[in-house]
Amino acid sequence: MIHTATEKSILQAAKTVFFKKGLAAARMQEIADEANINKAMLHYYFRSKQKLFEAVFLQAFRELAPLLNTIFNSDKPIFEKIREFVDSYIAFVTDNPYLPTFIIQEVNINPQFGKTFFANQVMPDPSTFQKQLAEAVEKGIIKPIDPRQLLLNLISMTAFPFVGKGLVTGILGLDETAFKALMEERKKLIPEMIINTIKVQ
View 1 (cartoon, rainbow, N blue to C red):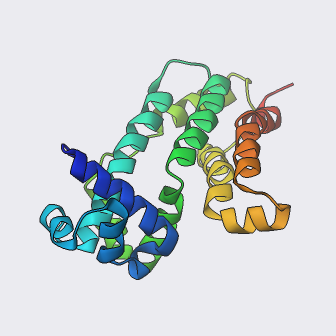
View 2 (cartoon, helix red, strand yellow):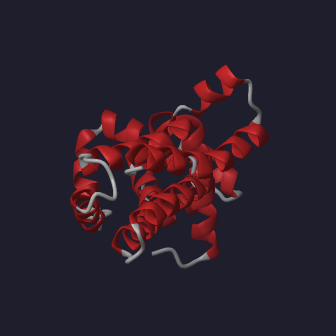
C-alpha cells in the first residue's frame, strides 16, 4: 500500500519510464531523475527495479480487478454489462496505457513472474457473467455462444488498440488527440457491434 507523496511520485515516474522503455531497458537512475530524487532515496523506498515494477503493476491491477468484478457480479442485464465493461475498461486503460503492454511483454519474457503474480492476487472472476450468458441463451435472448469467446472478444477489441498503439497510430496517421478521440468512439461502437451480433432479433 502506498502512503507517502514520495512513493506516489516514484510510482508515477516508474510508470513513465517503464512504459517508454520496458522493464529490461529501464534504469533506476532514469526513474530517480524522472521523480526528481536521488538514486539512494529511490533504493530506500524500492530496493530493486523488479520490486518497483511489481509495485507499479500491482497498484494498477488492484484497481482493475475490483472494477471488472463489480461489473461481472452486478444484477444488471447482459447488454448493459457489455456496455459498462467496454466503457470502464477503455477508460481505465486510457489512464493506465502501460498496463496491457506490461502484461503481454513481461509475462511473455518472464512466465514465472506472471504465474507467481496472478497466483497471489484477486483475479477478475467472470463466472457470474458466464452463467448469466448461458441462461440468456436458454431463454432465447441471445444466440448460442461460448461465454469464453464473448469475453475474449470484449478483452481483445478493447485492449488491442493500446497494446498495438504504435501500429494503430502509424497506419491510421493519428496523433495523441486523435487516438484518444477514436478510443472514445469505441466505447459505443464495440458494445453495439457485439450486442447486434449475439442478440436474437
